[in-house]
Length: 151
Image (cartoon, rainbow, N blue to C red; front, side, top):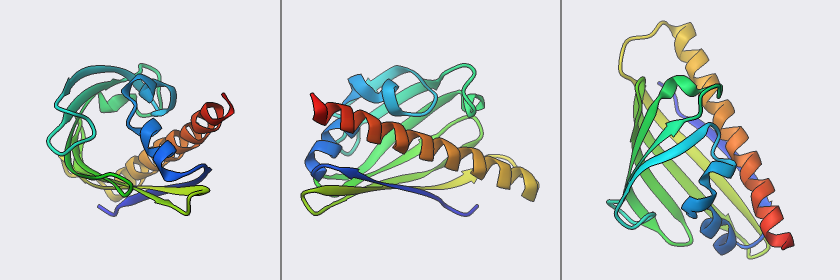
């Protein structure tokens, strides 16, 4: 299956964006469909850390159910790579932070594979749903970061 990418440019240095991105007390405010954290093991966002979270009932991607993620690599100031699995897909998600000290470009790329064979139209629909979720998450994240900077 082809990868999915979403990007946003936010006002603020990369360190501020990255700190908010990894602040577990704020995930529910910007991760699309975040219903709750079921488990957090290790030191997030460091390699080897694991989180399991649930989708909020009624969200567009609620059929994902439980989502398990494990950090594969993390480089402060650059980004994070994690593997993920839910009821329908497995994959790798890469988050990159590129900054000039004033603005930060955040790019999220998901490479995924379905657990069962799907018709091309169903794959297209699944990618469309996940791309929409990434775009909504990044939009909400930009609002959260702007609100944080206004405090």
